[in-house]
Length: 71
View 1 (cartoon, rainbow, N blue to C red):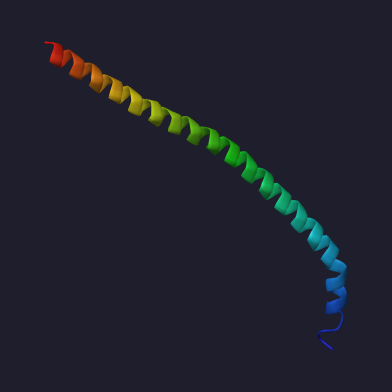
View 2: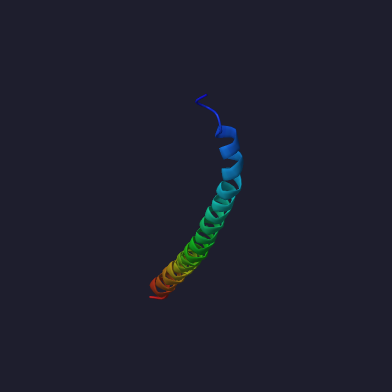
C-alpha cells in the first residue's frame, strides 16, 4: 500500500497550491505592468527624438541648399 493517502493529500494541498499560484501570478502581472510603463515611456521618448531628428536633418539640408544657390 505505497500509494495510500496520496489522493487525500492532494485534495488537502490543492487549495493551498491554488492560493500560492494566484499570488505568484498577481505579483508577476504587477511587475510586468511596471516594466511596460517604464520601458514604454523610454521607447516613446526615443521614437520622438528620432522623429524630430529627421526633421532637423531635413531643415539643415534645406538651409544649406538655400545658402548655396543664393551665392
